[in-house]
Length: 391
Image (cartoon, rainbow, N blue to C red; front, side, top):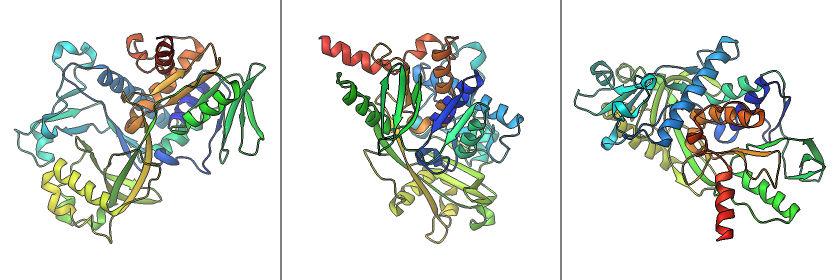
């Protein structure tokens, strides 16, 4: 997701972009998620995270719409359906009216009586409605972005280390063969970004640079709608539901054009592997029971061992839940940028981050206010290290 978004943003500016991907096919790793949500975060004070995710969702849906108009995506790949958010335990309240810009105050609101009823709730249940939000399948989105003219994709191309000499960045494989050289290099390699940075530190004998990246394992459970009873299918929400994990129905599964339901995901920190686990299906069943209590009995059949399917992957996070984007240390490493740490919000944030990289390299206006952009700047970590060193 990150690499494709950066590549598309740069190619749209006229750059020639070469994408080196370790995997043999598109959408590996966390970007292989079957389906997810482009959904804003809300908070009573409309905090930094809320404002950034709102702008990120706008950037994602705008790009998906443009790619659909170009014939590179279809209605089977994404939908601007709106998202119902069940405020489980009352969390994520709307900001006060005066906390939002005037043109944003209509995008998220209290759920209507009809929307509550469609989710099996009484009118007293706290819930929100996000009108400019929806679901998206990452793999076709990645493929569509990489179809932008000016991009060359090299699959099965594992970068083992990077170095710089004579004004050029070099990427090398494990056997010491040069894969490519370029004046501008963007590392959009999730948790492996730190390992590549350490190969660079080792080569220039300078002080260590540490991005505090962590892995976050997540599992999604899903199954075919046909395996549910007709009575259960008749009361499924007609739109995605978020709030304690998420529930999406009516979307095709990978390698299966039949309509499926999806629930997830789990959150497990500091994992290095992502197998599909039976106990996580049980956790996801508990999630859907909390998120949509009226489905608890009907969905039990879908979670039976003969029907349930799963996907698991490792997301990459940073302590403040925001990505690291742009130059790390332009004085020491001119032309080196990173785009990593999107956690569970790669769908909502990757395009915005790609646009931020393009703006930094092109020198044009940022895609978000400077006071928000500074919270995404990768150099916030190298500056912290520098201050600590001086202290």
